[in-house]
Image 1 (cartoon, rainbow, N blue to C red):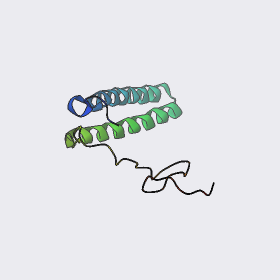
Image 2: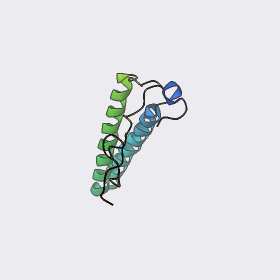
Image 3: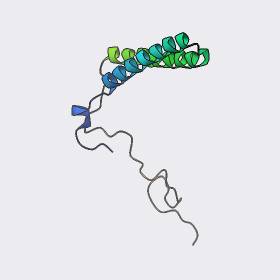
Length: 104
């Protein structure tokens, strides 16, 4: 269930994730260049692969930021329908909430 006032004051971590992805992309590119100059092609390939992952993450984050805020239901709308006893783990209630006749 929802607690507090999350829909009113929730903050998205997308800007922080964007900054971290950009920081990682810059370091991965610098590492690729440094390892190429040092004659270590395996490490340069690993840094290049990491740069590709960071670039993909950065494009996804920017895409989500540009989409803008999405609909958030109000406090009076529950996040899902109440159980009403349909998913009883022990099998002692039926669909209407009454006890089953187990023959005991």
